Image 1 (cartoon, protein in one colour):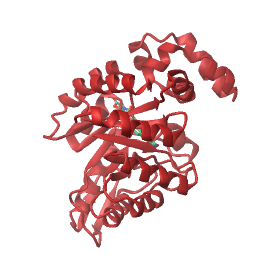
Image 2: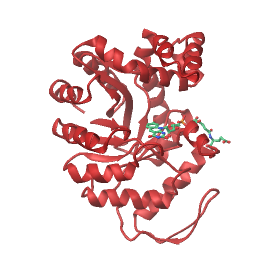
Image 3: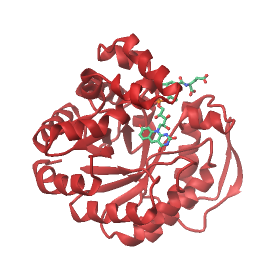
Image 4: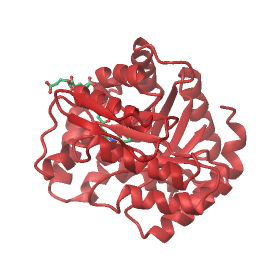
Length: 323
Ligand code: F42
């Protein structure tokens, strides 16, 4: 399965046009990111649902710190209604920096997510729910619509979250691009005894163009931010030198993007993105599939020119992917 990620930081007309193009080019799924500073994820999804016919769609990913699970259940059920049953829900811990900027502390993310997912699932079945958890207390809540079939995907990178995703989810969205990271992640997911048909999605930073250098240039800024936010074990897995990482972090902290982007090494670009010609991207996607990945989500930046890259994926890549 091939999905695509859009960040609603652009005029919605543009985003919707990209989605229509992606659907016409044969993509199976559209994931819209959720950050309060961008256009609202459900308003965006409602518009995309209206203008598309076949693709599955959902937030990739929302969280239970900013939005109560009952509201998430109601919002995704509404998207399911508008799209005639095409909704999927991506939910994760939430972005630590974004939460901090709203004064929200991310305590016990795994336990909180488990409660949230249970509440969402039960409300989506139409149950009148009373629930006494450590984080949420609910007395006789009931939705006026029910959609028990909506698949729930968990955004996960850490070992505990990956194992939890396979225990409570229908799929997992793993923010990574390199086979080494997926060898590790898939082993963790398998430890959690995933149900049959569990979808392991690679939420990858992706840039495709006929000109490899152009593809690389487009992905470097994204990689700089990924490197700056990656935990030490992930950087060590790729033999990335901590002094190289510090150079990027301090430049980003000063707002010196030129220096930050110039400090991104080839090793970093290879570790944290899938980029280059269609043939190279096909090889990488196949490698991930051999490890156990069942959906690749083409994530930011997609390419130096988004519509051109979507067409290139439709014309040259999708036909070569058999899962
Ligand atoms: N975040 C957003 O805010 N918006 C997005 O649109 C978004 C998209 C997205 C897509 C794919 C994806 O994989 C992630 C995405 N994210 C997005 C980020 C997401 O919200 C999370 O920040 C990210 O997935 C967190 O990754 P993580 O699996 O590493 O989990 C964190 C919380 C972590 O530290 N996990 C550790 C682990 O091993 O899994 C363990 C944490 C732990 O042990 N917690 C315990 C507990 O109960 O939670 C106890 C600790 C305590 O507090 O005492």
